[in-house]
Length: 226
Image (cartoon, rainbow, N blue to C red; front, top):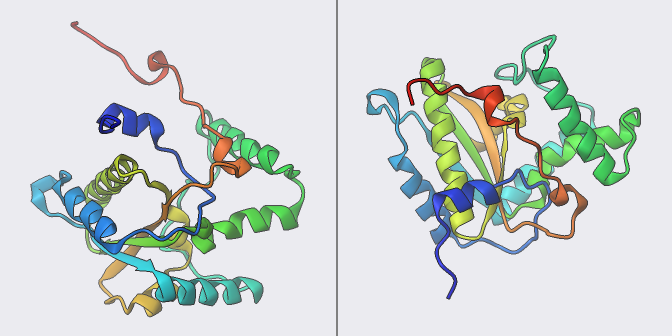
């Protein structure tokens, strides 16, 4: 019997998977992950997260709605800007290099607009994953609670890795707040923060052979008094 995956293993294993097998994930497993993740920290124990999980027919129905809107060239006003306007260095370079690796893996030229659109639209099919998650919070809350949501989402991703599952966090879903709100029948006071794909990775897909780089320790950290 293999040893259970520890936190270090889960962090090293985790990646943003962009191609999944169709194999279903038991609802009991999804519930366990979301429930255990609620032990994530939040300032003042506000626990700002609200989560909606879709699978099976509801997920297929929602995918079809978004596919029709994309085919018609529709768009919506995003809940927020995922990236700052006029992104600067070194962030611009990191984002550009990550995109270049994906294009290269698929044999796509970064000037091929149709191919790039298809690559982007894969987000809105949850990359073929059997589970789609939406993360929401009260829109009156502020950036500290957004960071709490990020910690909750990371807990979900690590717990999924522990159970042999893979994920892809998707702030890109903030581009479709009207459609998501209508389908989930969200109250007006909830904002859509992000989505997440969950399932079993397709190990043969070229997009899943990419491992994004990380900066050396000296670039992002200093140690004093040790």
